Length: 196
Image (cartoon, rainbow, N blue to C red; front, side, top):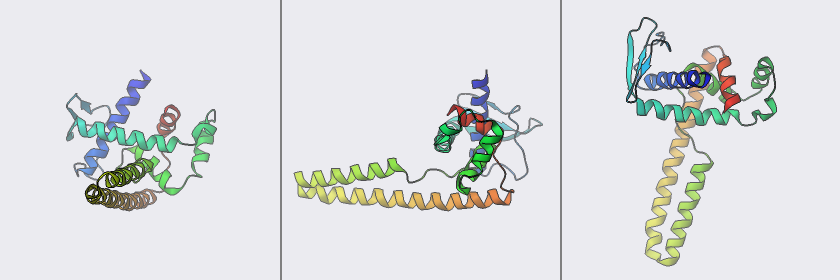
C-alpha cells in the first residue's frame, strides 16, 4: 500500500512538472493529488474542487517520473552514512549540501519544474566511444575518418550546448528557490531517498 501511495505521489509530482513546463498551470493555482486521476494513456491534473487544470499524455508524465528518479538517485549519493539517523538529523546534514542540490530537492518534493538533462559521465563516455569508432574507422579506411570525425564533433557540440542550458536552468532554479525562502524539501523526500 505504501509503495502504491509513493508511486501515485511520484506521478502527481511529475504531472505538475510537465504541466508547468507546458505553461498549463496558472501561478497560485494548486493541484490536488486526491482529485487528480490517471489512466494508461493520460493524466488529468485537477485542483481541490475537482476542476481540470491540464490533461497530459501519460508518456510525458512517465518520462518526467524517470528523469525525477534519476535526479533523486543523484541526491541519494552519499546517503549511506545517513542511514539510521533521525529525520531531524538527516535534515541538518542536508543543510550542508550545495545550493544546487538543495534547490533540486525542493523542486522534486514540491512538483516544481526541474531542469531536463545534463552533461554527465554517460554523455562523456558516449563521446569517447564515438571518437574511438571514428579513429578505428579511419585506420580501416581514411575516408571513413572524414565521416566519423564530423559525427563526433556534432555530438560533442550538441552535448555541450545541452550542458550549458542545464547550467542556466539550474541557476534559474536556485534563484526561484531563494525567492521562495530557501525552503527545505518536504519530509516525504527524505523517505523517498531512504528507498532509492
